[in-house]
Image (cartoon, rainbow, N blue to C red; front, side):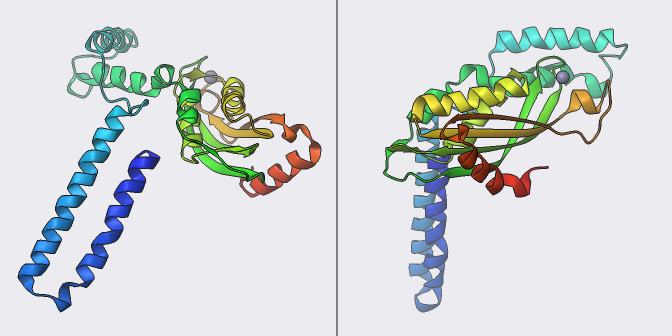
Length: 253
Ligand SMILES: [Zn+2]
């Protein structure tokens, strides 16, 4: 769930135990009415949240263009055939369609605008200490082999009059990760998006990731982790950069 939706639903949930705690003191009919009203309002909030989600500038990718899905499906069909498999056996019959939807889901970032999403949750604020969001889960596809690489991103910025809703930072990671990528470019794109929109005193991004193309094929280095970093503004200063690295270091390999 996205930030604003999660907030709404969570708040409505918080009221339910309070309402239930009144149960012992009131009559059954009254209780049932209260409970009914609580459930109805919960459903209304959930429904409104879904409507709000649908009208947001970004949406979870759940609809697939029929023509594109069919085109990719045919191609997966011939890939499966070309590797010597029987495309008609039971387990594989629906695989081309599933794979077609999966690859579209995993590359949905092309249709999303990271800077627009950051701009949608900007707030004026005097806070000027380091803000760190660490251990952001990251799943991407290497553009050389179309195999996954996955790991964690640690992001920090020092505001200069503007802060951003914290849930938007992992969203930005997802938007750039859900494309065919190299880890180096992914790191740069995240740092640039935050830098361009927030115009902070500084931004830092560190990504550590394991690449399936290294682990499953080629050199087969099972335990290697690739670390990339990008620093802008104040983080170019050794002291600030070291403070950030120290704060995330317990999680660094
Ligand atoms: Zn690769």
